[in-house]
Image 1 (cartoon, rainbow, N blue to C red):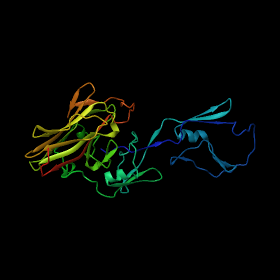
Image 2 (image 1 turned 90 degrees about the vertical axis):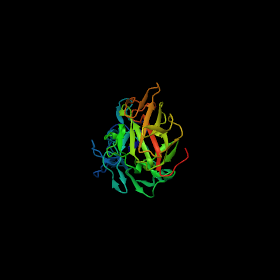
Image 3 (image 1 turned 60 degrees about the vertical axis):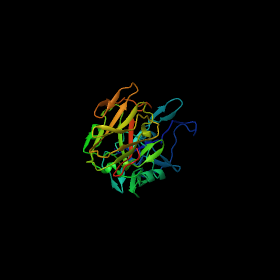
Image 4 (image 1 turned 135 degrees about the vertical axis):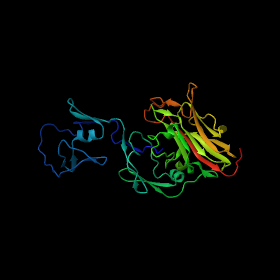
Length: 331
């Protein structure tokens, strides 16, 4: 699932007061001003002016209310003493355009509802994704494929196999419109980045009613081993519950991660696939009250994250570097 890209506007911060004491002038004065059809734009967007800007004594004068309101700030006139106060509003999220090798990605990739930092020009990010990232003067982001990401361990990526069945969230066309289970965004666990192309991600947003996901693959006895790393992503490291992954071969549990929490290191999951015809990956979640939800069961997430946010995900799990191999591995 591709994550939302956002950009926090922080031009107006705190409270600014403009009073007459700084430039002590009162009464009516006649000045010579220059008018030049001056336009005003805020963050690249033209704004409608309530009065025409002008130039006086090498300074450009524009209506403070127009600029303040365009920045989401509150602007007020104070009578005694005469002055103007500008109070910043809450930080806003501005939708950005995202490009893949210069080609604009479909609308909806950036819905502007959630802010996730874009680690632009970050060497670790580029190494984990195989992408180089550039940001233009408007803040738009362009991902360019510079090299293939590195798959840890031996074997073929599980993501190269088409699931025979997607269940729960993975079958939700709203969350996964193209059935995609991974994207360019790398997983982040304890500050370490893992290639997004090789990560299967499951996430739950605040207040969301979700069905725990599951994956089924038809192996037809062609593989001998499975290996992966399972973790709670840093995006939801404060998640107070527990999650675990079960590897089920022909109806029998043949591997599992054990219960893990956010803020913990990735745990290795391995399984012997010799003779296995059907492989299932079963997700389980345990709440702080001990209630356990399994693949296919419905869970209603809290409306507010433990960090107080109504937009940060409640839980994001990462199944990283999942591979299947035709050779056996040490169990």
